[in-house]
Image 1 (cartoon, rainbow, N blue to C red):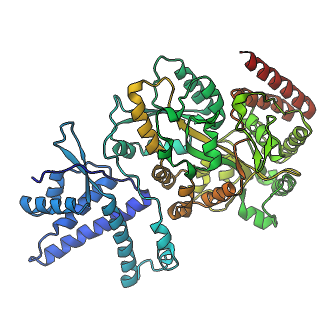
Image 2 (cartoon, helix red, strand yellow; image 1 turned 45 degrees about the horizontal axis):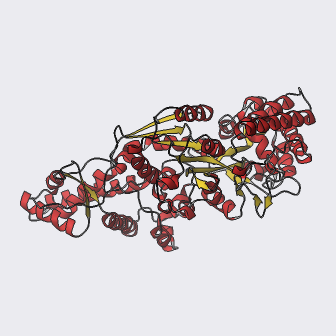
Image 3 (cartoon, one colour; image 1 turned 60 degrees about the horizontal axis):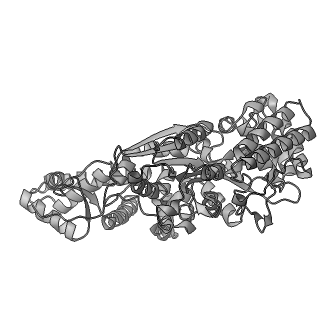
Length: 582
C-alpha cells in the first residue's frame, strides 16, 4: 500500500450542518447506486465513494482507516489504493498516527475537502430548489441572492482535530459549573475527545459547591483536575490563595487571540495585570421581557428603573396568574448578586472604585486600599427600588434564585425577568414556551443619572497551580481547544446562549440561531458590558453573602432599608479589615 505521510486532520460541525450534509451524502450515495444499477456499463466512482465514507465517518465521530476507505470504494484494491493516493496528494485527506510506531493511521477530511464539500452541498440544495421547485422560498435561498452566501463564506470554520493527539495519563480532567453551556460541552464529549485525541472526564457542581471544591483541590499535594472553571468574581481570591497559576508562565497568550474576546470578559480573568483564566462563557445579566405583552399593553421597552416599575405595575395581574417581574431574591448568594447589580444600575459599585470613562477602574484592586460602599445615598435608592419591585413579583420571590426566576418566565407566568444569557435556552429552545421568539433583551434599566449596564457574569477556564508538571502541556493544549472560536461556535450551535468572542457573535450562522448574540455584541461595543459591578477582590464572595442576608431581612420586613444598609456596611468593613490583618 502507498506509504502514508502525516497530515493534520478532521472536524466538528453543528447539528444542523451535520444533518444537512448527511442528507446530501445519502442522496449522492443512493443516486450513485441507481446509476450503476440502471447502467451496467458504468463503473463505481471510487473518489466519490471514498469521500462520502470519509465525511460521514468524520461527522459521526467514527474512526476511518485506509482499509475501510478502500472497502467503501467498490473498486478493486489496487485501483482504490491509487485513487486514495491521488486524494492524499491533492490535499483532501489528513492523517493521524494511531500508534506510537506511526505504522497505522486514521483518516480525516482536510480543511480543503471540508470547504469544497460545504460549497458543493450549498450548490446542490440551490440546484434542487431551482430545478424541482423544492424550498424555493427558504431563508438559505434568500440569503444566497441577497448577499448571505458572501457572509457565510466569512463564517468560522468547523473545529478541526489536532494533528497530534494530546498524550496524558488518564485523559483530561475538567471541573465545571453545572449550567447549560458546560452541559453542552458534556454532550459533545465524544466529539471533543476525537479532536484532542484523548479521554475527557468532567465533574459539574452548583456554584457554591464548585468554589468549595476548587479551594479544597488547591490544598491537595497534586490537583485532581487539569482545568477548572472559575466564576469571574473569584479571580482575585484564587490568585491570592494560589489556586490558579498565571497563564503566561506556561503558554504564549497570543495563541488565544486575546483581542477577539469581549473586553469585559478578558479583563475579568486578570488579577494584578496577569491572566489567570481564559473566557469560556461571557454571560451578562440582562432584562428579558415579553415583546408581545409589551405591544398589547402599549408599553415601550424600559430604559430606566422608573419605566421598569411602571411596566411591572401594568403587567402585574396575579388574578390571571401573571406577575410583573422575577429576579434573584433568595437569601444569601442569589440576592447578594442582585444587590451588587442594583447598586450598579444606580451608578455605584460595591467598592470605592475610581471612576473612569465608561465605568469604574478595577486595574489596581490587587494593590488594596479599597473599602465597601453600601450605606450611601445611592445605596438607599437601590434598596427602596428593590422594596418597590417586591410589589410586582410572584409570591415566592424570596426563595427565587438563578433558575427559579427564569423557569416561570419561560412558562409564561412572568412578564419580565432579570437573567443571565446562559439561561435563555429554557425558552429559546422550547417551542411550547409562550416566551419562545417573543423575548427582547435589554441591559439593566438605569437609575436617575446613571447609564445602562449589562453586568458581566460567566466563567473562565484556568489551570490549577498545583497541577503536576508533566500534565501542564496537555492542560494548555486542551484549554486552547475548549476556548477557541471554533469550539465556542459549536457550543452555540448545540444550544448554548453564551459566547466570549466577537468573531463568534458576528458569525452569520451564530446570529441566525438567536437575536441574543447581536444584542450582546451591541452592548459590548457601547461599553454597557461591564464586570466592575462584581469586582473580583478576595472578599467579594463574603460581601455578596452579607448583602444577601441583610437585604433579605429588609425584604421580609424585619429591618428597614436604612438598617439593612448600615448592618451590611458594618459587616463588610469588619470583613475587609480582618482580611488585611491576615
